[in-house]
Length: 217
Image (cartoon, rainbow, N blue to C red; front, side):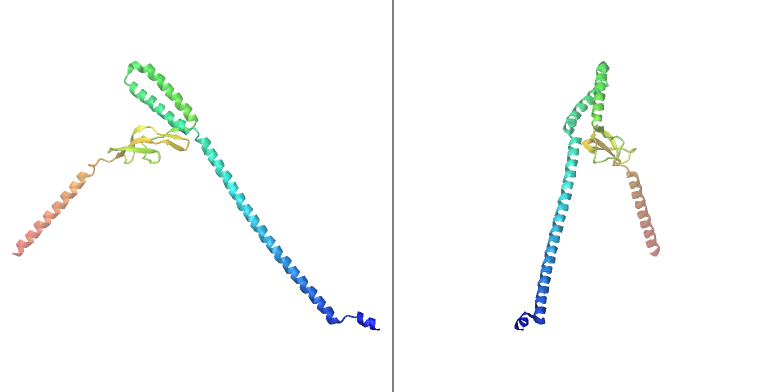
């Protein structure tokens, strides 16, 4: 009889143990949730960092590809620039030989050579800049002087001192040009007429005032 009493556990003790187990389980669940949140946060930060690094690397590849393309595109720029001097000399020789009939055969040979040279250079992207008759464009023209002209609009290229050239879409050498402007005396007669009209008006006004004074006297 005594042993049976000792084996029995009171209801209050059982409730206490159950409550303690529930509290411990709740604390464990909270800790697990917190750890999961920390892991998710760390994963998100790592993913964002990876995306940024990937984007930076892609931009770097595009920039390098563009630089490589530019390098290949204008690799012979220095050579082209040096050859322009040769072209200038050949064209100058043709100009001087134009008045010398005895050198016609030589001039013809120079002309053919110059034509062939330009054809080869055009295949590699060299083109002549149009200047004469065009509106002055500071991006491709370099003004050396201003030339008075009544028949031409202002800021029009009327003289070309040296040809300019483009290498593909880049200015290799700007054209040296003379730009038109209106004569400095233009518009002077109109100014003199206006001045004469003003003087005449003043004189008439003075005469009228003098007449009015005489009448009052």
